[in-house]
Image 1: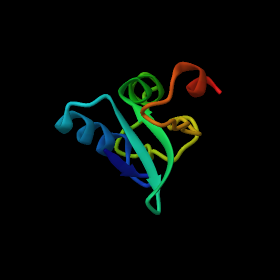
Image 2: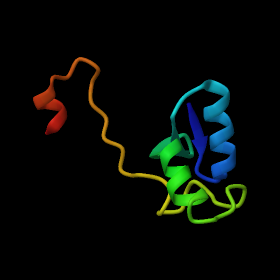
Image 3: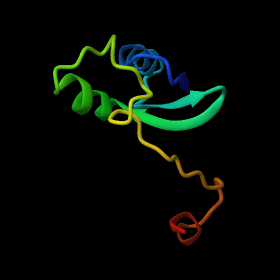
Image 4: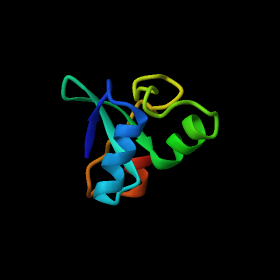
Length: 81
């Protein structure tokens, strides 16, 4: 599941809720730029009394980047490199 970088934390939370998932990939022009989790929204938006409808996914304090990708069949050593 992806969400554009311009989306709000609220919109991302609604997508995650509807799909019963705990994280969402953040994209810009269909390219992966980061990831946001339920916990990120809780600790970096709600707990800091920020408005989730106005807090965009692209702000540095919300999304985690870079996202590191490994092949599904990679072993632990390959994944840790």
